[in-house]
Length: 134
Image 1 (tube, rainbow, N blue to C red):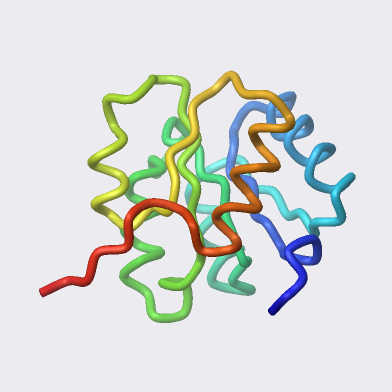
Image 2 (spheres, rainbow, N blue to C red):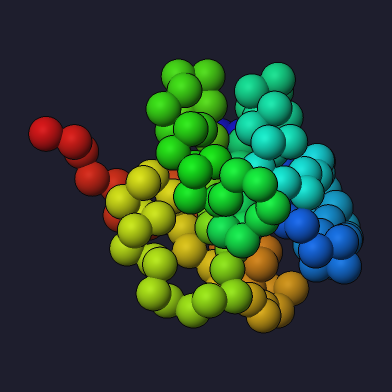
């Protein structure tokens, strides 16, 4: 069993204050954090060194979060990265991004405790429903 606290997390969020807040919470718990401000940078970082987990904002500049997710899951090098979609738009996109392979759907605003509980649950494999493709 790997140590959850040593996992590497890539935060993909275009809002610097939100990214900083998430980084501070997660670094305090011992996670290794990398950051990207847009989809192109996120994909480049993930392909260069796949993180254990990614927080992926849907509304990022350039390539949107859903497209980043599709490309990650289509690439054998990054298909295993656990992805938590982060959005301020509420629940309407949940089923769609889970169908694309996201592990969890997380809405803003959120508390530090909710963020940490989500990380622990997803890294332990308890994210969204795992469905086998026919």
